[in-house]
Amino acid sequence: MKYLGLIGYPLGHSFSKKYYLDKFDKGNIQGIDYDLYPISDIEKFPELYTSNPDFYGVNVTIPYKKDVIPYLDELSEEAKVIGAVNCIQIKRQENGRPYLKGFNTDAYGFEQSLLPFLKPEHKKALILGNGGATKAVKYVLDKLRIPYQVVSRTKDAENISYADLTDSIISQHQIIINCSPVGTYPNIDQCPDIPYEGIGPDHLLYDLIYNPEETLFLQKGKARGAAIKNGFEMLVLQAEKNWEVWNQ
Image (tube, rainbow, N blue to C red; front, side, top):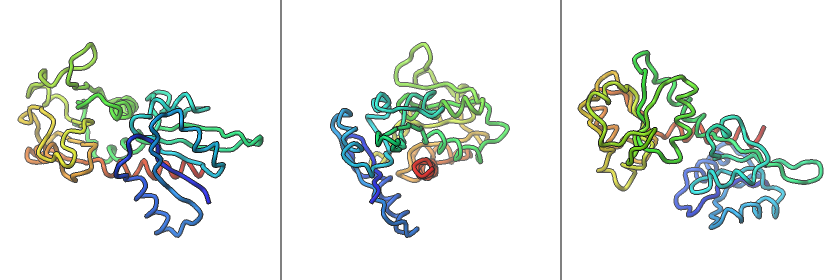
């Protein structure tokens, strides 16, 4: 039996576990298990793969996407730039020593799900929130050469605050990406505090949240004629990219 899993703390409902177990079942993929491994301290991480030589892949979630990096032997190009890892490939060398390589497949999922929606008028982006997910989004926008401005709760040298936003700023940034957790179930009556009056048919609103399927943020954009996209496809694409990484 080979083993895959998700590390983080705490771990509640997991998209990943259900996704992979369903994938194994539907594809008649046998001899592989995927489980949750809530570890209260990142120092416990090596116990997973040193005690079990059949452990060959790991997903990483909050709060360890950065903390896991010192335990890795190599980083992929995008993981180096982003400075965060959500997928680890574990291979065994000839001497039996595990060799760990970290990837950031969030960036791949975001890019591939965004590209079909981009139009010539989508020239500048606003990123709402400055948490962990923001780094992968910034990496993709840099790659696509789309200028962006981050909006955070507190203003600093690089970020503006929500209080700084005006209709004019909104209208000048045709892509608005919500990287904050605001609006996630069960708080479905909440949305980022932005002047939605500046949104029009030339806008694209992308919400990394996928539950609910249509957040209040997306509903408000849709009501003003904007194109909308939630984060579910991004999640599926990164999950499939993980599978590719583990089995290459």
